[in-house]
Length: 248
Image 1: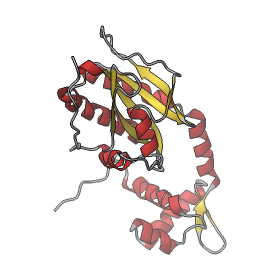
Image 2: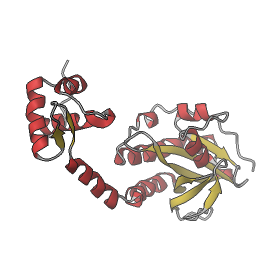
Image 3: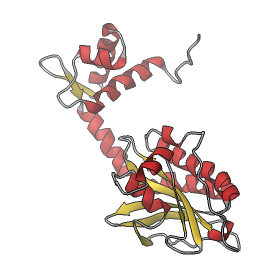
C-alpha cells in the first residue's frame, strides 16, 4: 500500500519535525531523544541539527544535548508583533455569512464576560444585530458556553459540548435569537475564541440547523488551522442535535 507523499521539500519537513520535537522539552534533547521523537536515523538527525545550529535555530550544549536557539525566540517575537486575529477572522466570517446568509461573529472571553471582537452581517431584512465590542454575560448564549466548556468549565452539559464540538442557544440572551458556536484552538490546543452564527429564532428550525452547522464547523476549522491548532474535533460527520420548532 502506497503512502501519501509529504508536501514540499523532504529535508525541510524532517528539519521541522526536529524543531517540533522540542515542544515538550525543558532540559533539552539528546540525539537519542530526537530519534525516538521523530523516527529519523541518527546520521540524518546529526546533519539536520548541524544546519539548524548554523542558523541559530538550535544550540548544542556541552553535554551533547540540543536546545532551541536564539533565532527561534526572535521568530516568535516577530510573529507576535505581526499577529492580528482580524486578518484571519475577516475572510472566515465572510465565507460563513455568504454560505448561511446569517450573522457571523468572533467572541473572546474577558473575565466573566464575552466580547464580540469581530462581526459580519448579511444584508437581509431581518437579521441579528451584533455590535463589535459588545460585552455579554459569559453564561448566556452559544459562544459563552463554548468558551466556558473548552476553557475548563464543569457545569452540566459541558461534557456534551466538548464531545460534539459545538453549542447551541435558543432565546437565552434575547428571546428572539438563536445561535450555533464552535471553538477555535491555537497551536497549544488551547481555546482562543468562539465562532458564532446568530439566527433569528423564527428562522432557526431543524432544517436551518442542519444546513448551518457544517458551515460554522468549517469556519472554526479554517481559523483553527490558520492559528496552528488541531481541527480534528470539527471534522465530519457532525453529531446533530434536535432543535425545537420555533413558535410562529
